[in-house]
Image (tube, rainbow, N blue to C red; front, top):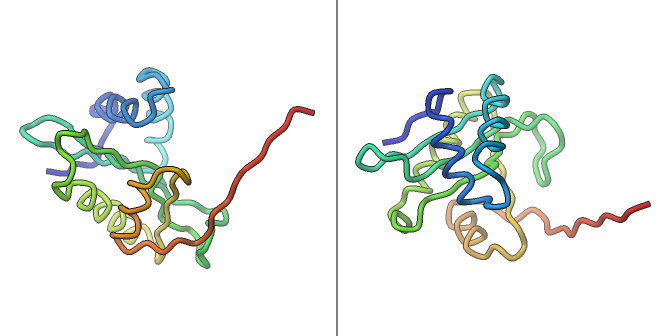
Length: 144
């Protein structure tokens, strides 16, 4: 079962997000999510198995330029994660479909995402779900 998260479930989303992004704390993720949850251009979705949240997706409307797109706003998959025991069961695809439907209902005609260059599993997932690679970039910084 997929449910759009409200403030009541945001701790569950943050707990799963911390598994995806372990460099963050659950507390910091939860605070960030609470802030963005109040905006109509952000949505978090939870997938439940046996009444337990085992996966999440974060979708957002982006109004800035999104690589490879021509419209605005663009629905954007900010993050998606399925706990390892529940992978390869189509859960991520169901969450993606839910995010795309949410964006379509918000008036979007395009949906986009990104992944790290080294994340081959994510690349395979995106390509297998109809995404087309738009670009590859390397970002640089330096102290001045």
